[in-house]
Length: 263
Figure 1 (tube, rainbow, N blue to C red):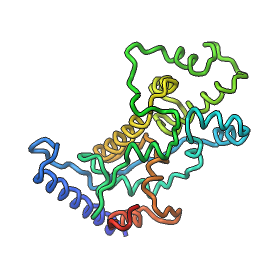
Figure 2: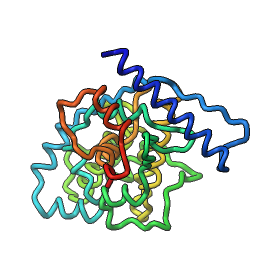
Figure 3: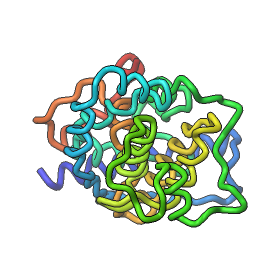
Figure 4: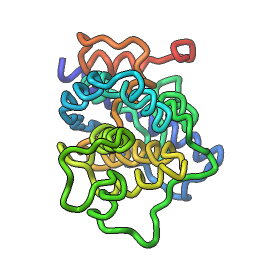
C-alpha cells in the first residue's frame, strides 16, 4: 500500500512538471531557465488550536451580542465548528504548485480567490478599495492591545463594554484560527492588522496571501506546519467530506479530478 501511495505522488509530480513545461513554452511570467523543484512528498503538520473555550463563549451570548459581532466582523464564528480533516489536508498539499500558486490536478487547476474568501467570511463592512498595509509607526504590542480592548495596561479583569467583548472575541478568532502562528498564542502581527479593521479595510487579500505563503513554504521545505486558515481552504476544496477516507484515497480522488467534478 505504501509503495502504491508513493507511486501516485510521484506520478502527480510528473503531471505538475509537465504542466510547468507546457506553460513555459506557451509563454508566461516565470523567469527564463526556471527549473521545477517539486518534492515527491510533503509531510505537513496541520495541528490546530483548542477552540473549545471560544465555542463556549459564543454559545453563552444572546442574539443581540451575536448580531453586533456579525455587523462588525462578519460570520467568523462558524469557523470554530469546522472540523479539519487532516487526511484531506495532507493529501491536498501534495498538489500545490507554488510556481503558479495553484492546485494542479490531472485535468483541473484550482486556486482560492479573493471573491470566494469574501463569500465564506461574509464580511459586510469591508471595502475592497481599502486593503491592509503595515503601518510605518507601529505602536508597542501593549499599547495596540490596550487600544483594541479598551483596557488599560494593568488589565481589567471584568469589562462591561459589550463592543469591547466582541472585539476581543474577534481578535481571538483572527489569532487562533485565521492566523495561527503559535499554538495557544496570538501573534503580535495579527494585532496590527486587527487594529486597522475599524477603518473598514478588507483583511481578505492578507488571509489569502497567508494561505499561499504557508502552502508554498510547506512544499519547498518538504515538511512544515501549515499556519494559514485550514478551515477556509477545506471549505473550498472538499466536495464530499467524510471522516473515513484515508490520505491515500484522497490523493487518488484529487489526482483524478475532472472538469465535471468541480462546481
